[in-house]
Image (cartoon, rainbow, N blue to C red; front, side):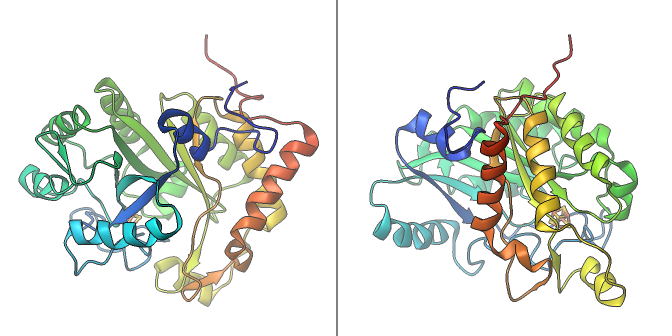
Length: 317
Ligand code: SF4
């Protein structure tokens, strides 16, 4: 049992984890570094992951027409009205944020941290979302340098450990690539967060649990669990409009997430148990728009059954 679990939340929420370290509310500030993605620009493919929106999974990232600094302060000025004493995580969210030359990447990251000096003293972490196949040795060196100046989190899109699903969603890399990336980053002391999606049409209930069992064997620090959003302007959206396939109900999703939480090690930080979709672009399932209902139902089931994160976790000897 983790002592950061509460009566309300039987799992290690990002909020509690951050409060315990920084003793204050810490907010994510999403930024758009105007990166591309090798799964869209032709290096791997031109189609992108089947579920991905035209904005490269960055629907809530910053305004691309502003500098990184201006994007940061635009968001912060809104947050400060409500939470004047907050701290921040600068988050490069849209597209593949380690895809480029080292100089390109440096130019973007240095707008947040340069020679040990941060854009703003209230920035506690730099978080970078990327693909595990965009982390070569030179980039790892750069990330290592940054991590020595400011805690660095790398977020890796994985979605499923089912290799058939990886092909179906056009992920463009095999599971082995994720294992290598996680181990390389952890060897440098960089925190790793993995994103998964429940409800992909080629994944069974067991596949979704197997994804979490697979990850629980790796030294990951955090996980983001999302329900599949079928988005209008995506290849999956086109398939759905042509031939609507069954999607998980809220009840099914809740049961799956609760079991996944129970299978994860108790020290893995749960960054998300549901995602944000743009309501103007979402085709289905519409219940995902009621984010607080989804979270409440998960919490309620865990409390009712007295389940905790990790109570089904099996550690290898
Ligand atoms: S999900 Fe990420 S890796 Fe896949 S196409 Fe979108 S931006 Fe690229």
